[in-house]
Length: 236
Length: 236
Image (cartoon, rainbow over the protein chains, first blue to last red):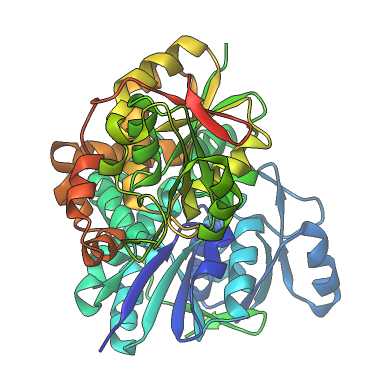
């Protein structure tokens, strides 16, 4: 049976893929999908991704925790920002969190309108995600959230990690899956060092979130796989 | 002085780049920009790229040579197809050729509406192109024509070859230029073998143009650099 494994390098290219019969894995390594995987793994009831800080406000009276950052600082009046360190069991266990994320939210909503199913990936849940994907016997599209609709290295690296782990279960690949896997093989021994070559990494360094970056590059500290049901991300 | 060297992986992402002050190098290795470089190098007066076979017809009465293929075969009534072997001095010297190319034409027209200048690149003129680019003291955007608006390996490989040769003259790079250079470094010792991993290569194999592919991967057999002036590609 034909089974496709493809990598969409940015949400701007998603229209080029037939995903009605595909599981779409949304990837926004720095930091949305890493923080969400960690939060769901730590017992959050649900996480609701929204695109703008202002979008959080409509949830303010429902008793949800609100997470919003501007320029690396927690927005005044919000509970916390986008750092994965905010998504501990102590802070989010049993709670619903509304999280602002520009690139990630856009990718999730675009995929959700057409895909068979939308789940989230990060280095934190790499192995459990890959085990689950291989058990589904469906086509898989790895969707990099990218940076402002363009290609970025960290999301592509993660897509390549998934390709390298599950490719034997698939028969058809696109050119971007080949490239992503090769870049991952080059970078895998020291992901942080490789990302120092990235423009995005330099931008992040200016935001002083180096500890967050290191955290997001850890492998397999979570088993949870967030799945998008309507507007809510919950544990699969 | 800040000087940017960027790689746009498909024409669908071109809007994300500020190119008003950039030289844009259009790349469509298999086979449009390779054939055009070869034809201009062999003394063609001009080559006019058009998107559809039907677009050639408006030029039919002007005494131009018409090149059109469908499914790898020369269209009946046309002079030749897109194979670089048709662009010899004997065939195109002193002539104007109208060439059908879907991906390449789209990329050239999109770039031409905004860029400072549009030139063509291929492995055939790699060194002369790179020498010229470094002498211009302008920003450079390497624009991969891709395949039906999506990423492809062969155009990205060539972009990476240019990055590896001229990067020392630039100060700012995007993530895709980093990825393209790394993929080129992996592939450079045997470009043809690397492209066997590509979906596009498999498609091309079905078209029986293996000799064309080998031809297009030759390094530095041409010095000409085609530049787009209005709708016409001429020698720089």
